[in-house]
Image (tube, rainbow, N blue to C red):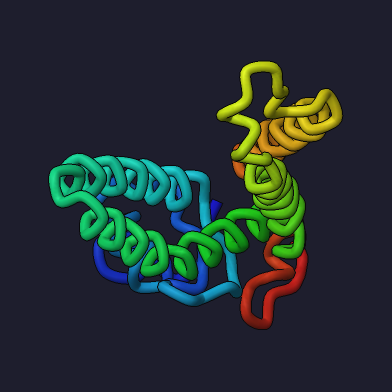
Length: 182
């Protein structure tokens, strides 16, 4: 799909999506374009980076598990370190499908909004009721709220998946630096 001037090894410029990119090149490009929200990212750029982040996150969890709370903080540092590049590559992926990067707010809002409702509901539980034999910890309305919130989290994941697997759209060139639709 890329028809411009290729760089070394047939690699397109950083401002263009790289269709048919390999794993190592996608990871390198992911970190090279750390906070670049402009331009586009091919499916390969996005999904290879996603696979790397998934595997690295799992490895960090396994390696830091014996460390207890210190390991948890290492995981938090990793999550913070990849937050901006993860958002950037997702926005660029949406641009490649000819969608505004603002669409990333929909799955983000559903997922984190639902998770916030679950946490707020659990935090509102009267822990003194745990000691009583006949007390109900969760009221029916609390259970219903948590059910809706968990469905929102699931919907956020589904929306994110649908948005990121979409095919490239040539009209997405409007998101390139100085780009015009073909």
